[in-house]
Length: 136
Length: 154
Image 1 (tube, rainbow over the protein chains, first blue to last red):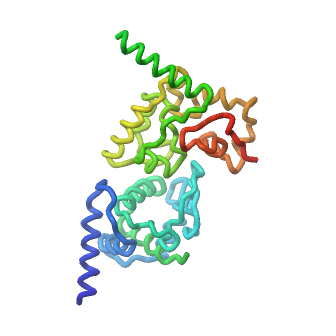
Image 2: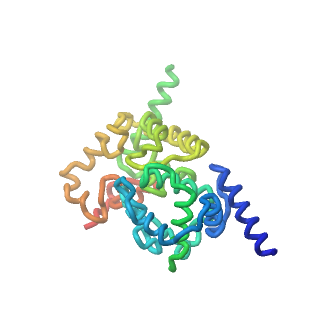
Image 3: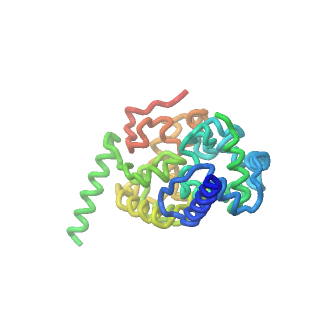
């Protein structure tokens, strides 16, 4: 009971903090963010769907992989500037998905560049499920 | 008016001195600027563009040279103010370059003309584009473009 309560409480808390944008660093864990996106999206997250979404183009020039590569346990490279990007998979970079405002900022910008709109909560959940399944 | 003019002249002169031999560093040491701008590219020293150009850049961050670089309002304001305070004032930088691109400035094109930098340099994998200052100017991120420290990768 306790465990279930804690999980629900942390998902709720993550949900609350996700609602506050631009409020600076908001500590979280990848699992909490995944739980929040999954709850908002209303269906079970799928790592396979996330991988497909991440590595495919969506009608524009770039996919997520254009910068983050198809193997996000390694370093990426900005497609326009050549700037190195540290690994996106939490297993390879502990700071990933630990700051809610930062995660939301990059999803908003990058989904706009790749998909031409904001990503849905379900799409974010799928991508996170895949990234979190990647071993170092 | 007279006082303003002479203050401007002093500013212009000090900027001129710092740019003439490249030995003085242009300021790049703003935490928010480093955190937000340098996550995608060289933290271009504000002294390399005039205030009017920075103003335009910061008002259309959602369409930032082909990518969405939009920021929350507070960060945008903070970075804008700092850019305005440190924007280029030296005569040659005061000209607004096409598309507000540093690499399209007359002074940039002259400094990097084919006689100085062979055209194939830009295509080398370690360089990639003229916007990648740090490829040859190792301390570009600190605002140091001293031409005696230039090392062009092969």
